[in-house]
Image (cartoon, rainbow, N blue to C red; front, side, top):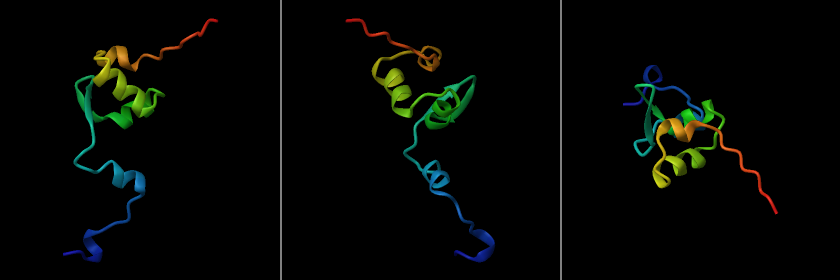
Length: 72
């Protein structure tokens, strides 16, 4: 049962990271949320997911910043 002693307020951010369908990756031997890793490395979650799951890059490759220079 919910009682004052066993509940607490959580931010939307905290609640979103406490779901069963979150994606985890292993970085440096630790299982971590992909969103947390993306934020730590200054990447968007979608970018990191795309690199790992669609392009099949290794975790190390996916975490490196890639800059494109468009030439005309």
